[in-house]
Image (cartoon, rainbow, N blue to C red):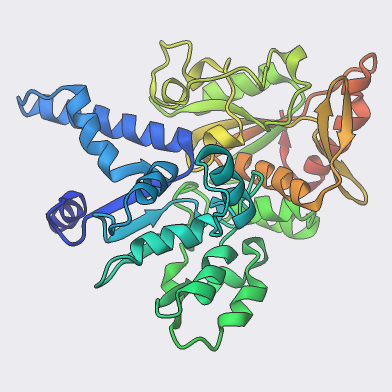
Length: 408
């Protein structure tokens, strides 16, 4: 009951703790709103109360907002927002100055905008004369799109423009995937910076059966074979991970693993454009609400294993069991990963380090979406198709097999 009272404070407009949950992830916002709306309608019906889905959705929309809508409201009105507390999900994906300024010029007619998205959002909360709190929820190595600033920009703009704000950071922000080393050094002697061990979520809530899965994925992507082999021995008894060259076997494995309403689905990189021979069309639109929330009887749901989700659809969300289909965009070589994008009729090198990071992080996202286990499919390729040469795929399969994953 205490927890419920606290929650009610955050959704009561008359309470000083009235809060807003912000995300720039469109699918996440849509799915959260729909799920909470359905839940609200169901609970009210059980109580004998009449409520329309539209009424329930209106209340949910006030608390869960797309960060761009919140930003637009603050642009229109220079008064402090009604909320004193803003929870920013996937804060590492907020736009940098260049991306924000470009958008403001093209879409909002503001050619001289000079703030990154983190700086502007903090400035909105800074309008309050008494107090405000911004909670940044951060995932390491999760930047997957052009213009995403990372957590460093939040700290940088606080150091640059808001010297009076107190900054509370996790002691684990120094880990390499967060990319914050230089900026943390800049503010280490700042009088208002406080380091707290408890701000780090040390146990993955997504992979509740194996807290070491994220570490294993990091070691795989860092090509740290020996450490990945060690971590796999700790993971595999609680969290099965298998590899295969056969999509039919992968689908069969998924269906056998899942119990009752446990959700499963296929996920792929947004650059995986040569999976068409396997009936996977990465550019084909899918409806995330139906894919994530509807049941096994709906052909649009993830259960049908027809529509696929990319890193953009699934970031911030999860399945119980996943099938990750690995294409030739992210290839294994003895000298490191080979980054490619398919343009026209051939694979081109990705040369920019920033785009390489986004692709690597895309696979980090894909490989950490399952709560209970996953199957990874590396297609065999086709020697008659130069865009699907087996030499693109065999080294990936051999690398994963060398780590110790079971082959089905």
